[in-house]
Image (cartoon, rainbow, N blue to C red):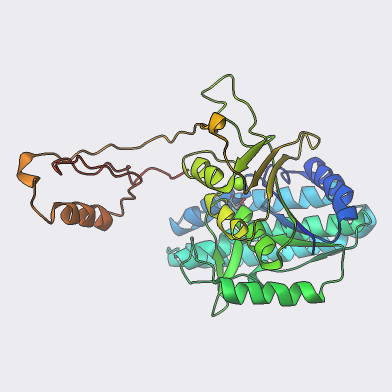
Length: 369
Ligand code: ASP
Ligand code: MG
């Protein structure tokens, strides 16, 4: 395998966009075999989560939500594949949707939705999209196959945000790649499995991470993350008018920017590729000739000290002060313990030199994005 290409939800949102993806992949095959990792069709992950929540709360509305999911995929197949080649994929979509309905019915009857079952439900987004895209590639003349990322990526059983077990995963991926002859392998992003075989997920936005896991396991030369913007920007364009695309950025800087609000790339993505020095290109499916951003190992010359500015909303700043704390051990412990018990995620800590002012923390109930 020579390259890993990942296409996000907006890049595969509908048949027209998937045709663009097809052209991009085709144009890259002269570089060698490709692994194509895909997200769910844009918006489907949220719809599936809503469906599970509706079922768990006893609302029959989950049936309508499921119908939307089914219809969207059926329509995509119908406009993407020639009529003569639709039936296999249509029945596959139907089968997946029936299974999904059975699971949601179970949730509805029990009035209970565990993190394990939620992962199972949400996995259908990537399962469906990857199956449809693999069939479309095949129908349009690419020598393409589909593979199940759940059989290759092994994780812990922390449903919703599983931890990857890199040794087993790397071995499984390399064995699989050694046996794969097709030019293109299409795989679902975001999903994996734990030791007993149950489906797990890698956290919201986790398809980028899937792509990086494959790239690192196979030590490929190129990883491309295809999205709907032409690269990482110097600031958030919703707040700043004169933003620019960053042509090149170091792994460390990209990690910092993505952790602190830049949504272009899922933060854990950088780590597996950084240790192997694999460059990550952020490219725009809707403007494929734009150069994009390359994330790579590079020195930051002195005159480019600030690469970009990012921001996070809904942060709480907490100051704990008082002269009674000066020189008294145990205050920090008590504060952090209380925060940890409340599931509060701390993103920044500062302390006055005299020790009488304690940490700053972020508000836990707000979404990390
Ligand atoms: N579909 C998943 C999500 O929306 C994963 C991804 O797209 O990266 O979070
Ligand atoms: Mg994403």
